[in-house]
Image (tube, rainbow, N blue to C red; front, side, top):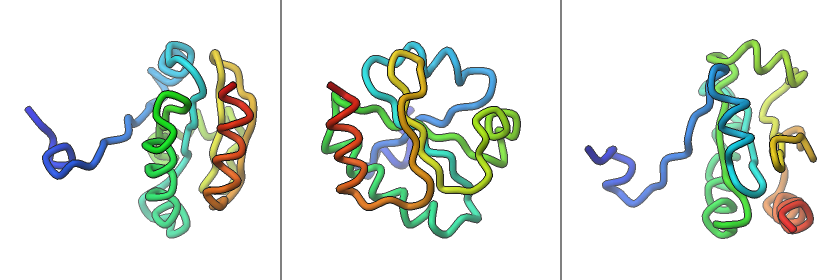
Length: 117
């Protein structure tokens, strides 16, 4: 079955939950950008298209995954997430960088370019 988002040509970003977080991040090849967000967070909603564009433009260099903080309080606590949006960057399962707040696309591109090498 094709999701409604796929029918309209919009890629669906995988959502992570506590039970699959470590395994998914470790098993994902290359740089992983994890977006901690919430539906009620205005800056998160404004930042989402920027993250999607970046992941699409830099396909093969970075993979975008998302964690809804309302669904993952233990993950949120484990990574010290006190404000959102918050991006964590992982490589080979190890945290290598983080961004607090809605960063400009150029800042994120720079992190991806530096860390994906």
